[in-house]
Amino acid sequence: MEVNNSQEGLNKQNKLSYNLSNPIVNYLTINSDVANQLSNLLAQRKESCEGIRINVKTRGCSGLSYTIEYAIIEKNITKFDDVVLCKNTKNENIKIFIDPKASMFLIGSEMIFKSDELSSGFDFINPNEKGRCGCGESFKV
Image: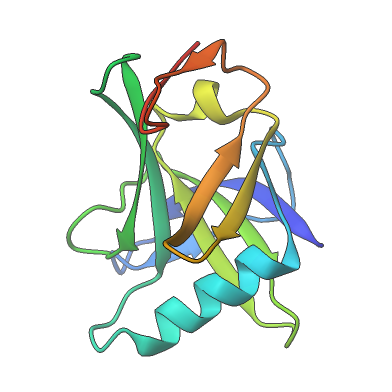
């Protein structure tokens, strides 16, 4: 799976521009199942968005929790976000924006998609985690 990591900036017309030629840090590994699931979610969305945005919030039993939301230019994308580009099986680019406060918690992580009879969703295999709470909603580093 091709993944590019880079910082994102704003050009003079206040539109997003991406410099993907200089990878800085390998934040996230994304497999084709995840890329396809993200493509499906983005295709079903009626409102325009640039991709998804990953953050880490302080909450839960263990202290930190992953958040995933749609990345919207006027709402939650900042010029300081890092961008991970991946391709689905149709060779389409998917942009994943990473909040700069979450960057240090995600380095070397793998984003996965889990599905069973009762639930499905995205999760992270993170080598920086030192533990998770019993319900699996939060983690500590």
